[in-house]
Structures are given as structure tokens and as C-alpha cells.
Image (cartoon, helix red, strand yellow):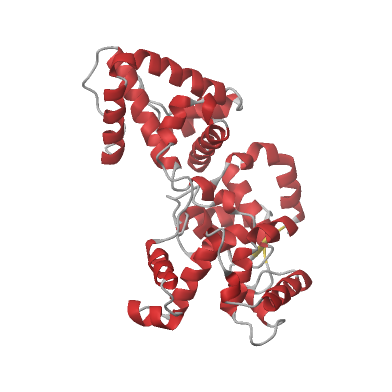
Length: 355
């Protein structure tokens, strides 16, 4: 149900302007500027990367099931483009609270959630086992960086491990008790302690009568909820805050874009950077749009005049579409696709408020 609701919400927000494949790339967390820009423009950033192990076959199967159920219908002759039926609109309204949509902060925690969860899992396993003087156990993860981090933490708290474990329990309980019992229970049943191994996705699916997709999404949603709560009131959660503190809290620009940024700061032109790096000019354009999305003080005026920016925004409001082709056909011919994408990137907050 949750996965179906996410697909339907994405289709609704995209408003027939993107194919279903864009939804697949979004929930998979594809690291392309187009996917990330779409996440911002269509207010779908919360879903970015929340189902990284999803296969295209599985996604298409869900899509077909939604069509068969009368919740989605194709848009004219456009291949892969869908819209909601009246039945789907009513379905979303009736199931909104059950879809857990407010849990997700995908773009914000895409680079943090998995490492945080693995650290938490292994730390709990280590502290509960060593408390019982049981030092030979199979770690729940073989991630080298996570194992190293837990070993370092354990050395620091070796003389106060029982107190640390109690504090961690209190912090987790105080957050999880705010959630519906079923969601909190799914999360707790995934944890491993002394002589108590966490349930697998399939075992959780059987126990709670949920699809494997929904189990994964509930776990991801609860992790995002934990992270957002910790970030909001980190003083209330010293142990959990310590687990998070050196992890990236947001998707960072790609390494390639950072190289382009460095060259731009040295006053190389786009054409020179393209030649120096043996990359297409359009690739350099992609990097600049990526920088515009993440740099708070990005100087967009260096690439498009203020008057032209205002023209793009005016057209955007008039055509009521985020399709680049629709906007391009309505602005001055001197304004390029690259410039339009830049305006969309730097105005993403304004655009999302007006959608």
C-alpha cells in the first residue's frame, strides 16, 4: 500500500510532464542532475533514494497493477506517461495517513540513513552482548567503516557501557513512542541484541502481513524520522546525535561537478573547461546546474541577465508547465535550455511554494 501511494503521489505531482521512468530513477536515487532537479521542481525530494534496491521489473509490475486496478491511466499516446483516475484521487485522500509520506526526507538523508542505521544496529548488538560478557558474536554488518567506528566508540565508553546502553534505550524509546505501534515494532524487530537476532525483511513481511516493499519503506521512513528528530533537538539525544554527527546530512555535489566548480573559480570559460577535461559542453552545463541547486550564493547573473530570468519566470507562470520545451517555445529565442534550467534550479524553493 505504501509503495502504491508513493507512485500515485509522484504521478500526481509530475502532472503528465515526465514518464514513469523518472519516478523509478527518483526512488532509486539516480545521481543525475535531471533526476535531482525534478525532485526539487515537482516537490518529490522526500522520495529521492528511498528504495535504492528496487528493480525496474518490480517497479513495472507495480505500475501495471495500478493500471489494472483502475488507479492509473495512460495519457493519450504518450509512451510511459500516466495520470491519476478519479478513483486514485479518492484512494489517496482516504489512505493519506497510512502512507507515511511525512516520514520521508529522502534527498536530505540519502547519504546518511544507511550508515546511521548500520552504526546503530552494530552498536546495540555490541553493547547488549558485551554487557552479558559475550564477546564472540557474528556482527550484523561486515561494513569495514561501520565496524571501525563501533570499535572506536566502544573503547571510549568501555567503563560506562551499561550506562550508555541505558541512555541509548531511553533516547530511542522517547522517539519511537511517538510513532504508531506497528511502525515502531517493525523497526524494533529489525534490531539485533544478545541471543536475539533481528528479523529479515521477509520475516517482517510475514509477521506483519506487509509486502516486502512496504517493510523496506517503513524501515526507511522510521530511520528518516529518527534523523530529523535528532537533528531538530540534538541536545535531547546525545547518544544518537553522536552516532550521526560526522555523517553527511545531504546529497553533496558530484566529484566531477566539484572539479568544474574549481576551474570556474579560476576564471576558465565553459569552452576551456570542456576542452581541458575532454567533456562535452552539455556535461559542463549539467555541472553548473548542479552547482546552482546546492550553492546558496550561486551567481546566476553570470550566465543569464536579470531581465531574461524574469522572462523565464513569467512564462513559467503563464504556461503552467515545467517542460523545458514548453518554456523554450515561449521565451525569447536567445534564451537557451541551459539558461532555463539554471533559472529553475536557483528558484526551486519559490517554484515549489507556488506549485
